Image 1 (tube, one colour):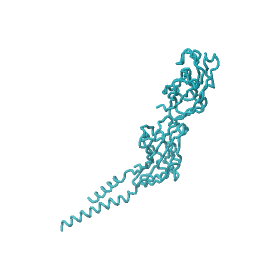
Image 2: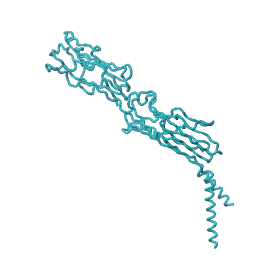
Image 3: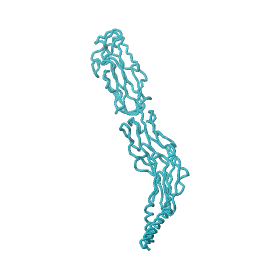
Image 4: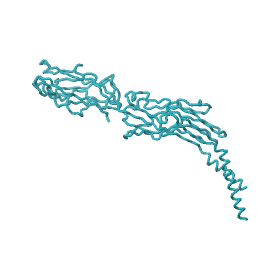
Length: 191
Length: 186
């Protein structure tokens, strides 16, 4: 009798031991590589040339038109900032070697129709500060169909507004020359 | 002489016990489970153009993995299931960035042999976002009196970045582990 009870007990124990859920798994490693996409392309207006050849232009400056507009596109997988600054602290004459102050040149930025962020939408004088943001925290994406525009003008605010030179080109009595500088456009992720 | 008899009795009792255990195992011990990945045991996603990031459909690896799931349980299982989960709710980047594991999804493209085959079987054919909480993608029922034997081959699709969610994610190399599990239900 005792053996029989022992036998049943063992049987029960065996069932408890082996009656648990069976299970197995497999592990699949997954990797995601996010490569940096950050590209700025000047589409047009890569060489802006103001020609001042009338007294009116010396007095009132030259306003913006499509001829004095730089368009650029940006493609970025992250929100981005665009910086713009002059290579030198003035426009230097190639012939006589004189200098025209940078603040004779003004610009404003027209944003694309899509996206969101802030940009320099009001007139501002050009300077050589490398940290000058003209587009800030703009939404990531591709803006090839609807580019940014930088609208340039020269000597248009003799009143000295927007940080531009208070004196007209005429009042500054700059010698005739071909004044040049390079302007850098830089895009960086908004981190 | 008496001592010898006692020894024999103990030996006999031990043998009987072992026989019971062996019999029990022979009757009920036909069980086991396997998940075998024999194709696509590494899932790499690479985003290298602005369209990769912006695509509303995300990036897909179609028919990437083939997985065999097997289960045998003769101990009165009432059913079985296959579930999928990840190790970590965040994909960890090498540079310290992270994004949600929900941005990665799996889908059963096909099952061989045909499934579901009987009432009570469930097959998830939609995309399943992944998290550490297991999501059942296949399940079946069983009468406890019947032995349970399951063997299927799954073809798995993967998708990452649906609805353009990878836009504005930090550039990095991210990793996580997907876990496919088959288990019986007692």
